[in-house]
Length: 252
Image (cartoon, rainbow, N blue to C red; front, side, top):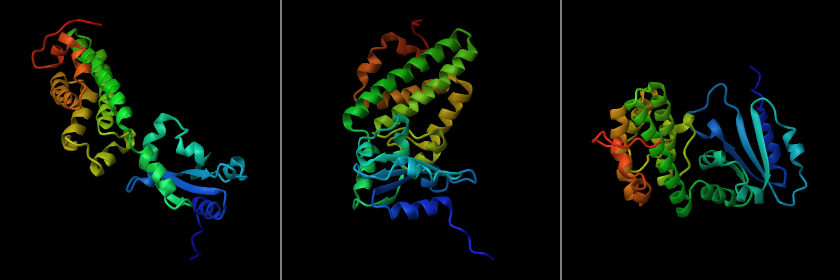
């Protein structure tokens, strides 16, 4: 049997490590998540080059092909997280393949993986308000006989809820494909995934009002413990619609 040929990814890593302009290689996506690789998975790789590098990104990008996707940036750009906000989770669970800076690349990644206290507080307050808004609209639409609107708002509320819960823990929300993976390995403090995931699934699929109210009770308690009572109190009497009382105003 002929020996297996190195993959394009392996060949590129070998060449990049030998290039003094390359200071780091960071693998993201399914290849960086144990147990998540499928036959369709490619290798998504950050290539970090020195700020004064003569290695042109176009030259490196020339190695791109089936099974290999490169993002090339300078060390300063990488340190400053010069990338879309949605890329934050990819970096949070990325894997360092090569670090010419004696752990410097790993330290930058560790910093990007956590929201600082101000960022976490600001984000959680915003996501809490968005969650309450969609949850309130869902329950109100259900009360008024608008079943499709109620289900759509319920599904929206689960997106905001997940953003909120991860922000409360100072973490970027995982992509949907990695949600179960993330919670199995890095649980959210105070939340049992065996309860949370079925609740998110049930609310998203059916808009079940009783389930939404039970979940809201838990969220309200967690948000108040985290110091976001002012966000909730701004809703005034409207919150009664989300609690056991089943009453409340008709604000739009």
